[in-house]
Image (cartoon, rainbow, N blue to C red; front, top):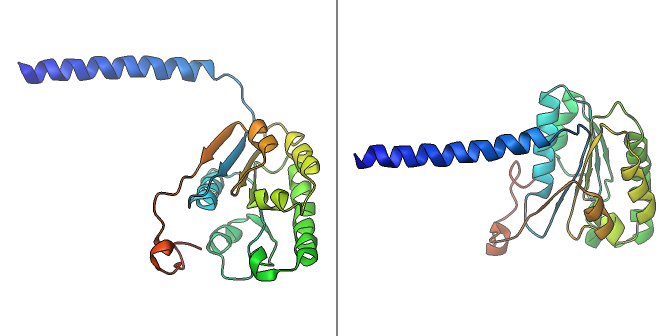
Length: 200
């Protein structure tokens, strides 16, 4: 008897939840590309972006990627997605604390940004990933208003993902979806080395 009563309560709760979800689905009538931002100090921002890129490729979508900050080391995302037709533009200079050369970094960032602008203006790209773009604005390597304008004026069906810590407030305001990764624990803080295939 008690088991049946519990089952009935569960069914009623789930029916109520279903009705709420159905209402939200019915209310979502607009179809367009979105701006997604993965930010925060926790691990997983680029991982989330490339998970979405992989999903898009799996559905036959055209994807372009700009990787700011990244160096010349082996790149698991590139190794997987480039053979599947994903276009990559990689800054290639590495971390700014390694290069310690602002002028070289600005030149490299500008070259990748030119390719980014081209992709953002091209309706044939369903998804454009701007990995670690936030740092380029924080360090003033790129003009913030130019970046905002390019993202805002992209083709209506194109989705853009921006990753990186400390996302600029204008990008956050423009974004349709923002997820903030919060650090709870990180293996590196315990002296565990970054691992191929896990961290890069």
